[in-house]
Amino acid sequence: MENRDVKLIEKILSLKRERNAVILAHNYQLGEVQDIADFVGDSLELSQNAAKTDAEVIVFCGVHFMAETAFILCPDKIVLFPDMSAGCPMANMITAERLKERKRQLPEAAVVCYINSTAEVKAESDACCTSANAVKVIEGLDAEEILFVPDQYLGHYVSTKTHKKMSLWPGYCPTHIRIRSENITELRQEYPQAKVIVHPECRADVIALADEVLSTGGMCRYARRDDVSQMIVGTEIGIIHRLKKENPGKRFIPASEQAICPNMKLITLEKVLWSLEEMAPQVRVLEEIRLEAKAAVDRMIEVV
Ligand code: 13P
Ligand code: SF4
Image (cartoon, rainbow, N blue to C red):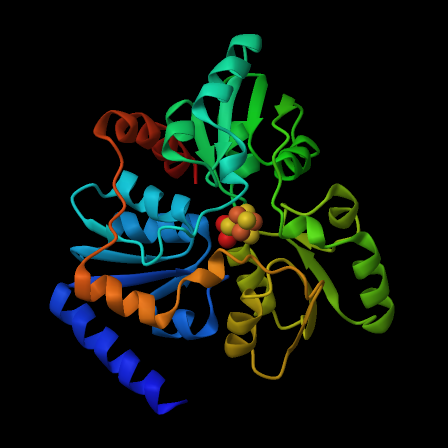
């Protein structure tokens, strides 16, 4: 490790103690950011962790909707988000106004929003879900008709696992659609022993070729199995850092080197340090919206 990084990390850790802060990082964060975090996980695990932490300050290393969800669950805490421009393009493919319009067209449908959505969209939804619990949340609702927003690919995957009637919003993740079925077919030939694990944000033809469809947290658990020694990983490549670190000796092959989420990479050690020094930028949500959004998030947490 470079001397500059050692100094930076020392400063972050000492300021973190001083501020009574906890650092939460998503599995796609830069390796150096994952390495200084108190907890690294998927969207569901990060929300659960935020909800139960005793720290007064949460430094959230991920994208905006994740920090916003932490605030929705813990309004008494300060949620620092080191780069306000780190948004999720899929979350921005729907607005509350457009959702309201669609709800008027489907008055019988219960609205389930993927956690990759803004607080305003969550506030317009009956329940929230993540890639780890989407099927369970939808099965747990009384309604037979579901409007699922904003990810059409996760929505389509869920529709193959439930008998409910599902209408899908046409959103998608620009990073996961870069993974193509040809990538999987070629890599399977090259690594015939490898298991193919993909995220449900992938295209349906990619999902059809997979051995398992898992959230990023699910992938990390799967990689620990004794019968897995090689994995073709169909998700954002930042996760490879954690997979390798936790499973020395095993081989992890990215399904596509192009599967990079540029927004996830905006959080750096320097920005984490500045946010702790300045106690800014902070993510907040208007109380009226927060309460409505929290009802949708709570519904998800009750189910899992
Ligand atoms: P996970 O909840 O599976 O970590 O997914 C979050 C995400 O943004 C995937 O692109
Ligand atoms: Fe959003 Fe896709 Fe990035 Fe996940 S990988 S944060 S869904 S753009």
